Image (cartoon, rainbow, N blue to C red; front, side, top):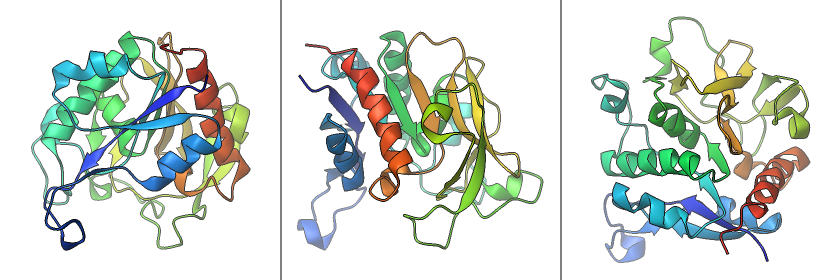
Length: 244
């Protein structure tokens, strides 16, 4: 039996002509492709009421938290600054609940870009709302190169789970303007860019599999064996946790 992987979905805020003006629940196709490629069965989890998180997680063996909008800053005690992008409080509320319940239920989690930031905030961390507020010169984190190509190098902790598939250095793509500021107490940073920003996290005191990455392996896996191996590691862990 293949493990069932829940992929967090997004919602178009406004209808567009392509969908006859209707609003649409969706996920990026590459998430689906990556999960299928490594032996999982993907299902998209739509934005729901936070109280339904436990029941929804009971249907899946692993949780893939996806990218998307910025995170509503009042979830980490700040007012929105001028540089913050679009945010979706309804999605944030649901995914915060989903994050906490996934940890509580010991569901394997792979969190990508926004997904990693949501998990950090849900567990008590905070974010820089924009690269202008980091307070030091940074590399190009919102790359102009093809999004399927690696842009900058990361240094990876040799004792991390991530290093088992990526080694101690990797060139990754980069499509974000927000960063982890305060790291949640029960997470630890397992990769950094050469400007010192956090690029990956894992659980410090968690009893279940959790890897969060700031880049987008779903955009690289078709041409990068290590990115495919990251999805394979997650799906294999999910197989151990089968709900049925």
